[in-house]
Image 1: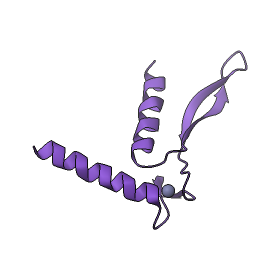
Image 2: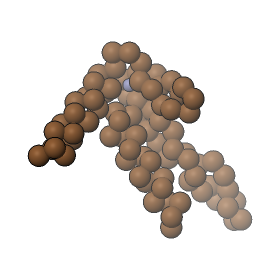
Image 3: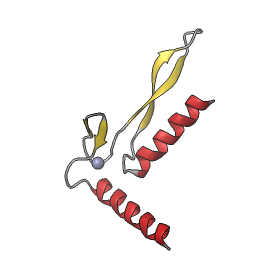
Length: 81
Ligand SMILES: [Zn+2]
């Protein structure tokens, strides 16, 4: 299902960016009244996440943000090799 794949990739992206406590949240019900997962909420275990223009941001000095930045830099180095 394409929608489920989008949710999975969005969750993976948020976790990569250091939002380690992100969750899939039910936001609607199907025709049987069952919750269907249609959203992902950015959450961080080390800070209060702020959304600016729809973009999730860590607080200044958040250790998860620093770790995510290091991962990003390492990935860039690997891309150059
Ligand atoms: Zn954070």
